[in-house]
Figure 1 (cartoon, rainbow, N blue to C red):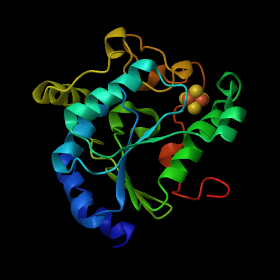
Figure 2: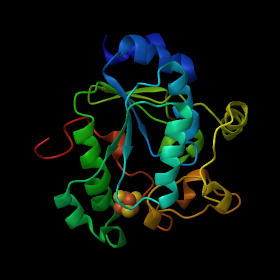
Figure 3: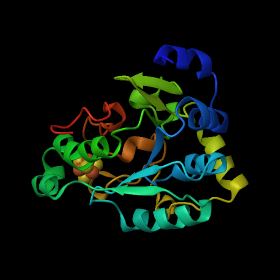
Amino acid sequence: MSGIDIIKAYGHLGGKDLIAVMTRQVFAGRIAVTSSFGAESAVLLDLVAQVDPSVPVIFLDTGELFDETLEYRYRLERQLGLTDVRVVRPSSEDLSEAEDLWRTDHDRCCYLRKVLPLARATEGFAALIDGRKQAHGFERQDLSSIQVVGGVAKISPLANWGEDEVQKAFKARGLPVHPLVEQGYRSIGCWPCTRPTLPGESARAGRWAGSAKTECGIHTLVLGQDGAGI
Ligand code: SF4
């Protein structure tokens, strides 16, 4: 099926229905989930686990994550019964170049710590499921539930979900909350580039605050084609 045919056939679906059709039919055995195990991640992972807890979940450990995120990953993994969480890390060579780069060059740092390792880890997959939402604003405000980038499908089952639906899902499913949420963090990435949001700010306003950057680049990567030698 071409990307356009997939969008035409399934673009109206969302949530668990979209996950089910993508993991069981369209991309069976060739699809993975990417998760930051951040503030809202439990909702998507719970839907995936209800459909098939053995779908690979790729967790990018940049080396700069909060300790709370690393602990939360284990808690969620256990509670949801996820059986194939794959931790992906930057190479030692990339880490040595990236050492303190977040102070001076966010784009290069994200490229070394996130984009390159994810490109390596997702080689062979035809589609990736992510938790992006229009409600995050910025580049995501017009997000559709299926996008095709460089021949690879990006599936965003929660694209149309608002904050109310997310909170309802946490309550209805008894999902554990990331420990930093109670400190005001509504979107959680690497510690040097994440701060709590202020009243009235959008959920992602605390990411790379004070700079024009709003995305790390992993959602626009073309699988297996973003790094030299991959
Ligand atoms: S979010 Fe910050 S620390 Fe993390 S990879 Fe990007 S620039 Fe580096």
